[in-house]
Amino acid sequence: MTTSNIITREFDKKASEYESNRMSPWYLAHADHIFEKMSFKPGDTVLDIGCGTGYLLRQIARANPQVTGFGIDLSPRMIEVASQKAADENLGNLSFLQSDWEALNETTKTVLASQAPSHVICANAFHYFADPHKALTSMHSAMTSEGEVLLLERAKEGSILSIAWDFAHRFLIKDNVRFYDTPSIIEMLEKTNFCQVQVKLKLKKFFWKNKIYTSVALISGIKR
Image (cartoon, rainbow, N blue to C red):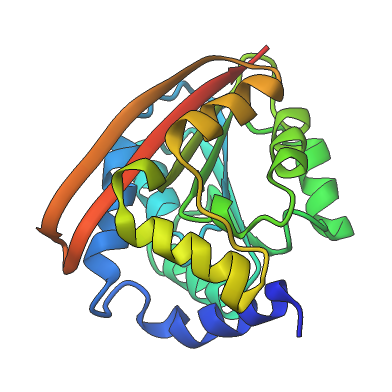
């Protein structure tokens, strides 16, 4: 079974309780922090890669009704739940598509071609990419000129647990999952022709939102 199939099955199982399970406060707090660091103007389009149940996009859509948002996720069940939650809130400016960012289906390609995003978000999903450079290149290509990318990832340099998990995935589990330190992500963004790359937020907390230790960074860049 491929890594993407394993990830899909894992998140299909989590979808119905993704915003209410024991770990949901941790993920939702990340979305809240990202939302606080973003600004929009009428007509902007937001793409959330690995959108889960669409919590962040719903926040954006409620606060910015003139902004269009769409999310993609590997998990069909996550997309079902996200679509239903948006419909329940009458958020007609949101849509959700099941797709693999590293192997986009034709429907998603068509949407991207017709609605180039001015903002691309990838929160807690970058470590799943088998080829992060290719994934970033695809983000860069899809975006409008001077669009903003925001990556929220575990900051490996601040977490023994993330270092251990990275070792486990590389040498024991032997899948595509990789965790990166913040300078490495910055370097990848700059090599993909993003400019003004900066760390917008760093969180280092003990016993926060039901996690023993949290070390994450929110990194942004602008398309040249």
